[in-house]
Length: 357
Ligand SMILES: NC(=O)c1ccc[n+]([C@@H]2O[C@H](COP(=O)([O-])OP(=O)(O)OC[C@H]3O[C@@H](n4cnc5c(N)ncnc54)[C@H](O)[C@@H]3O)[C@@H](O)[C@H]2O)c1
Ligand SMILES: [Zn+2]
Image (cartoon, rainbow, N blue to C red):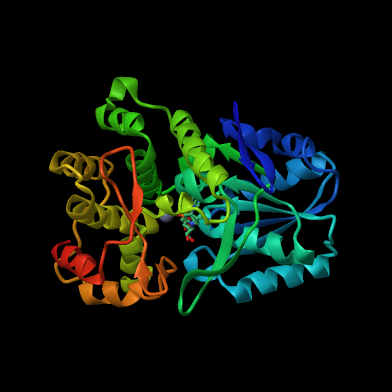
């Protein structure tokens, strides 16, 4: 097992990465938390695989867990659902000494984290991510929240977790498509911050395959380095993680959050961001080709279907939080392994690349 520390102004926490960690989850949590009541928040796909064992394990370690399961899917990430969970927790007798365990992918991470942030004005949040995307991205950095009709993640809080437990074995039950989309965020990390990891992913062969454990560790480190520098999104450093996300979010929304998974939409968004980077940041064409190849290699999309309503992508952009005072803060990459914010990208630039996507 590897333990990585994430340092932020609001406190430090450990990310444990390894195999078979769930078997001793109670003991591991006991090292951080005093005996108390806790809510395990999970979804209908994840809970049947892991929740019972975790509940038993926590009970054996002296905790009093209550399992709360919500319907799987992004549509559960709402204020109403967060409220309903809080009501259940109150009825069960949970209080300020209690804590919340999020057991699931990014949807559950965001929802359970938001509940932890508001329940009794904030209780500790522990994360047991069960998707690759959640391990390498959403469980790190403390962003929690819910969706609204106007857009995704528009309500939320920064509430850092107290502990993250990444048991690689849980990924075995993940549908292939869901596993694959996690690589979109990994490729994003490589493009914006780690040229070496980009080469390794590119040159990876069956014999020297980077293990999932190593990949998760490297990506937790990349994201946590960025979060440490800019926990509250103030200096622009953290905004670099939005590479591919401006257009990506527009695509997710234009596809009613059904046609594309988040990582698939981000893959397409990265292709758009690369085209813009050629024009605005001097990204070499050879780098664009390498990025497109890598995205394809992981079975992720690089082209929108011909009949996709492209105009809706542009309509969706006005809901994007990155449009500050009508100005776009667009993440560009001048070369693989680095990124910066550009205020020089216009809606017309985006329209041009989306039309060709
Ligand atoms: N907070 C952040 O910084 C941040 C960053 C990126 C994404 N997100 C959020 O994360 C969410 C996307 O995360 P996701 O892709 O993990 O989606 P998800 O949580 O919806 O999981 C995808 C699907 O896989 C199922 N699943 C999860 N783990 C499983 C397992 N081990 N076995 C079988 N099925 C399993 C889920 O039930 C769901 O159907 C979005 O809501 C996005 O906004 C947040
Ligand atoms: Zn993302």
